[in-house]
Length: 110
Image (cartoon, rainbow, N blue to C red; front, side, top):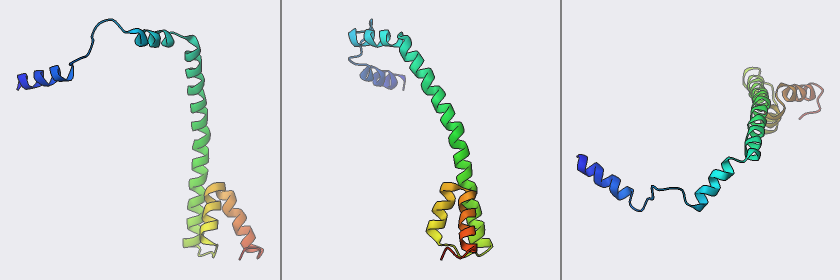
């Protein structure tokens, strides 16, 4: 069993050079020591964290809009146009479904 694993490893490692890095690898090491890349990476991480906090609120707003839409359609049996009202509820959240309900109340929505 051990010889099979050793044979597989030697076949896998054929042609691999375990000596000092070649020229492209040395250039990559120099690139990693560049402070501009470090600053860009920190800025990208900050932007990602900001977007996650912002998008988390947007996603929660969309989920709430979908839940309120479902409750108004299936629980309260309000006759709203199915697909357009769902899209508006998901895009604009509770405010979107509230606007649709106001339009329905005033007879401006078929």
